[in-house]
Length: 314
Length: 314
Image (cartoon, rainbow over all chains, first blue to last red; front, top):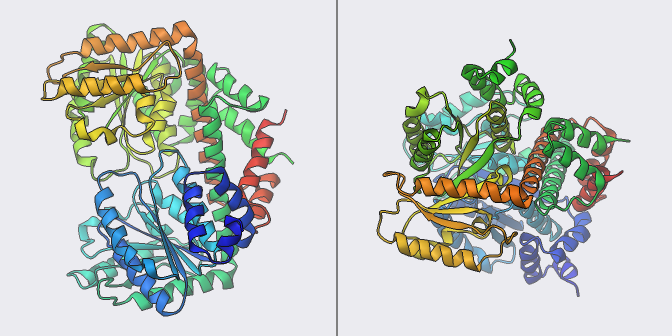
């Protein structure tokens, strides 16, 4: 039986093997993704983001517990960005999550940082597709919500959960422009700490000032204490409610389309980069545009306008 | 007189103003880049990369001193990646470099991290073009050499200088795969520290084991002490030698082409991302591909293959 068939029949080792192949951008992994793609689209993809120290891993552990108690199968893809400074802590968190390793209804994959532009986003999307095809009901994608990562998580998820901790007070800068607007649910984690109520209120005020794409859903603020499990049930209820709202309003289709667009765009970029770096232009048109830019006969923006016109020609 | 004409006539304030407009992706900046692009291509673009703590800013300060002593005009573009952890130190370094602010032959621009995918690379390329058009002989691009940045610096520079500090010993992992191969010149900075000779030797051994695209140039290892200025003359001599070798072997044209390709690719990616995020597909073809992927009628890889074929059609 092929790895793909084994994955579809619930074989965890085949899933783990394919995840590694996909992560390494191996041809076998690529071929598997092509075959499995029609089987995807059922899982609820939920991004969990927040700064280092927000307790993401403990939180995810608690959320997985609630999901499992309800009989749902859940996949976790933890994306480690390439910061060598936070590497140690995240690894420790990973190991803590491994306690669930024996449970067949949970699959955890920690993605190592890749050096390739677009590589990590693509590898993440690929592993999410595998989990989706393998029948996991929900896939949690954990990222550190700083820098360019936010867009990746928003681009690849139906629902974005942003974790914060009490004491936001003078740390409102932590909520950079765009980050708040991107979150569907805001969580004040470690809610047993001093200042939790104030932080909840601050976030609610910020939310009420924001502009939202849809009147049907405004970001909600939920307080949790992942360590004690308090509020995690309520949070899951909000995640489910967000999915329902997306489905009822038809916004689910828009999200699917945005996710497809993000993946196609990343993949096209990675593909172009690979060819450009290898000086392998394959066709005449791309080579001509690049040469004209290199020779200063055409500004980059004009070459890009020509390429976009080609992408859009009937 | 327009900002562009003022820049070409040597007006620093016009240059500073245009750099801000380019950094903000303002339409006026974009239009200026189009007009100025034919005037670019003369400057030697040198990437200076290395981990935090390698002393990049002090090193660049010393290098600028040597360049100015030789009567050369030099631009510095310092790229701050979005790490909030290193933000403070880099800002301090910036301020130290500002001592040169009074010198007309030096222009320093610190690029703030943008949230947009591809935005920082594009803004950096744009400001480099401005400095090139304004007649600066050399442009130094400073980046932190971790994560996906390496490719950006390699993609946008003729010559890549990688800084290391003594005591590499068990820190060889700092030289991640690809980073060494990308460097044209390796610098052991802070060479007055213990272990400098060993680190130089370790790097020379690593270089001799590496595979190099051209037999004409192998990465060289130079020891400097930026604080005392020791070795900085010799380093500049190697940077100049690299440029000469590129010119003599014709590799200069390949680098220009690779740089053009990197910029076109980043720009296309940013443009597609912007449209995809705004659900603004403009043309029928892109929209159709994305919809088919979203509806699971076509895997992403197939859509990308179709789009690439469009880019390459005669």
